[in-house]
Length: 76
Image 1 (tube, one colour):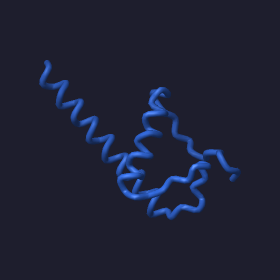
Image 2 (cartoon, helix red, strand yellow):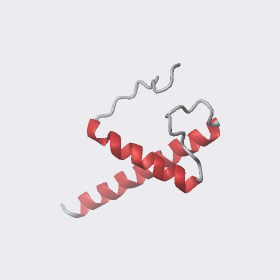
Image 3 (cartoon, one colour):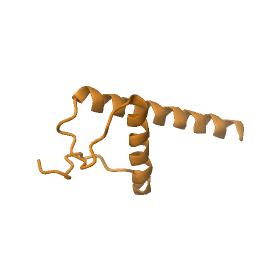
Image 4 (cartoon, one colour):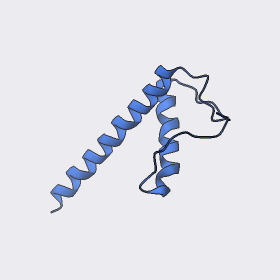
């Protein structure tokens, strides 16, 4: 696959969230001490590293959603 192309079939429900998710990816990678390639090609990265980044992003998104849900229940 050529550089810069994505095979992902995932479609964001809120397209405006794309930039926030990118920023979150870099924050998580920095916390884990993993360098994300500047050219966007992940082919030379270990699967363990990319999986760790994705797992931590998912964990953080669930945590954010739980906090928002808990906050909305108290305001009713």
